[in-house]
Image 1 (cartoon, rainbow, N blue to C red):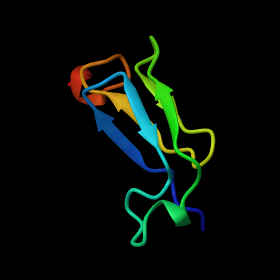
Image 2: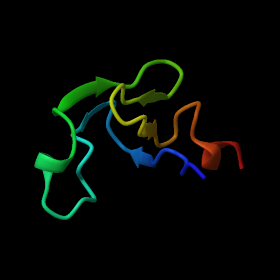
Image 3: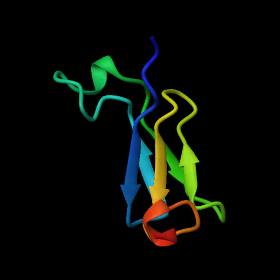
Length: 66
């Protein structure tokens, strides 16, 4: 069974991802560091690891709808 991609909530529209934030041993086990920009949808997904970054208070933030 495949695990769902990780979701991260952030306060900034520009985020970085190296795929190894939670991996013991660091970036050598992840992917190249990339900088991503959250657009009008309120989220962006990493092209390497599919991690989704959601802007807090943005259109994709489910807590905003509640």
